[in-house]
Image 1 (cartoon, rainbow, N blue to C red):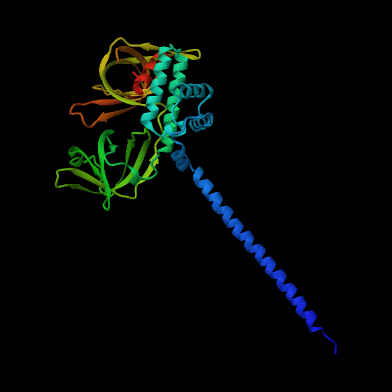
Image 2 (image 1 turned 90 degrees about the vertical axis):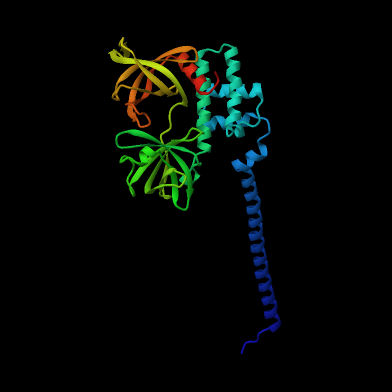
Length: 363
């Protein structure tokens, strides 16, 4: 029978246990170290989140890095970026990355830049680049402030519903509660067969103060007349909110008389000339942008036609050729009033800049 050395076996066992303990200790150290690194990185990432970073740095002066970030966010071209840089250099605003989230502050900053450019008699091309830059910053602001669901729509928001006869009705979001989305509607619509039927799906559109447009697809739950005398439509809280196609230019409400007449487009080679009729009709302009407008008249003009439109911005007369993209009926009018939605197809650069200055309240 072979002889075993008991002391040798004990030494081997102790050596194996020491090795195992060392491995365990190393593994524990790695795990603890990784956890600590994760905590530190998490804090760094949290500190660098846009909201946290902006709150900490919002009052610091604008640096070149901030300008580059804003230019990238807004998609500015080189000329537009130069105007942004010149504005920040001259007026030394606080952090421009934060400022574009503040609608009133950014408006005042660029009002100063506009007045400075106007005093320096900047040419129309440079002024056009200024307004293009302004609009792109508006778009960046919209992207930051987008509404993600119906519950985030503010109370008092005006909504537009178009019935089957293309009448536009103005509704108001009253509140959102356990019943669903409670919407105040005109008495005429409440009593009309044109309102969406109970349990039927329908679409409302609206535009926020930030300038974003949305479509709200919902379903009618029921109609009620409240004790206060208010007529309401209760819509399903499970409504679908989608961002509508955004306009290519900023719009501004107004109410000024206008005159219009028919236009015949004549193609000559690669260009188009417009033959303007002599007979003019009266209308009322209701909103305008550098890309189009909306006005009403008493004539049921169909979409797909061209017209010449004349109106004043301040004391400056403007004439533009437009294309009717849509014609609707005005439900709020007792007479037969038609609303024409116009896309501008021929507008001079000087007039375009005048309209832009009016839209931004710079004139």
